[in-house]
Length: 440
Ligand SMILES: [Zn+2]
Image (cartoon, rainbow, N blue to C red; front, top):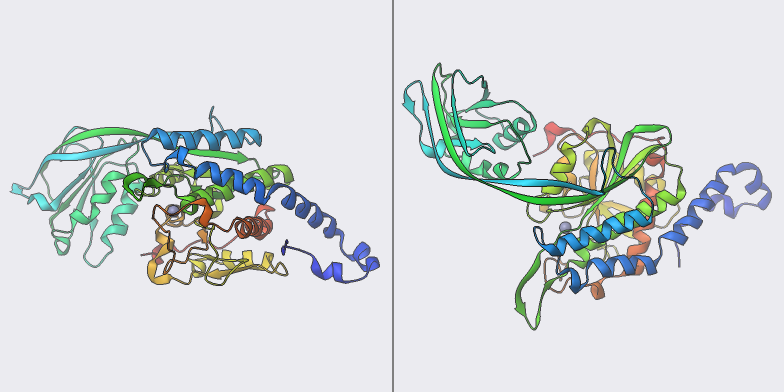
């Protein structure tokens, strides 16, 4: 039973009225026919069951198992005849995560040596030594600012920086340690030192052990008919937790809901929009890697494009179980941060489907998935989910298996996402941007 009937008003009127007043009705019917033909429970089940099969062993990042999943997603893109990104010869967007482990470091500013705890060097070089003649730009992080946010902002740039952090942040640099693990082939260096001076002379040295680990997103596109430089992104993450200690004979975290479900939705939407072939804006489809270990896939992806060109991002996470409101509903994280949610809901009018604001704001879900990276760059980037985060029995458990999912409802959700995006895909509506300064 398909509750997603658009143009109900017209259908309820007489046939005469339908012919004269509802020229768009034909278009709507075509969309609907394709929607029902392409986004089927059968195909959703096929893709979902493949990704979440024991054969893929939980798709853990840095294992051959996740490579198998990447190959499968790429094959689905190929079968749908989607375009690769410009200049790419594969759907795989390959990169290396560089892990730098500090071996030793020292800093002397105007002859004063700085405590080890108050030095943080972000570099991909084994040996780094800088002085006042190295051409480093000095930047100051002042008292009362948000250290995390300031540092993250600086990391986006490409310059060599000496960052002088106010002494009110003494012993806080450890909190920035996570930033050290988000480096992909960066060739600039960021040196943070806690000091209230503006040093005339300085010598800072650091030694790191550098390890490169290969990763890949799987990305495809459908170029827009007229607004080629305006992108709409649909995404889900295809990594999960892998294999762990056996319990009752099982050891595989299949991640059927988290996030084979979102990845399946993204693939279905790619097939649908390709068949529809009327998108004015360019659509990008991304299966992200390494979400569970820090969102590295989406971070790399966001660095490969101009965020100003991304008009909307639909990230899809865990839509395989019924939401707290029951069937035909889902929620959108960060709903109040842009007007995208109301836009989507308006496009769903008369469909019997409802998008709600995230009912678990205390869980900060907006910041906990792959939408966050692009949102921090101002993109209206939200995650659509049904997961009952206060009571989802299989979340991050070995029991997150296909049998626990409601595939009929999941299919309806995927269709609803397609319908909800209509005006944005058509280039008729553009959601407001995220106000970066209001993010935590
Ligand atoms: Zn997830």
